[in-house]
Image (cartoon, rainbow, N blue to C red; front, side):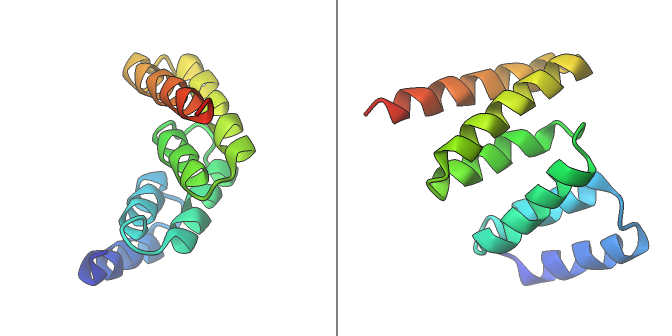
Length: 108
C-alpha cells in the first residue's frame, strides 16, 4: 500500500466524489494492505455505481479471500450479467474465467 498514492487519490476524490474510477483506484490500492478499507470502497462502488464493470472481478475476489463464498459467487454472477449488458466482452471473459476458477477451488 502506497500512502502517497492513497493521499493523492483521496484529494482527487474530494474534488469529484462520484467518480467511480477514483473509488476503484482507491479500493485497489487498499487491497495491498487494508482489506477492510478496500471492502468499504468496493461495496460503495457496487451500491452507487453498479454498472462499473471492473468492480465485480476484484470485489468477488476479495469476498473469496475473506471466505465469504456466497457473496463471492453472487458478485461474480452479477458482474457477468453486468458485463453482458455493457457489451464488455473482455471483462465478460475475465469474469467468467475467474468464476470458473473460483468454482473449481470450491470443489477441493
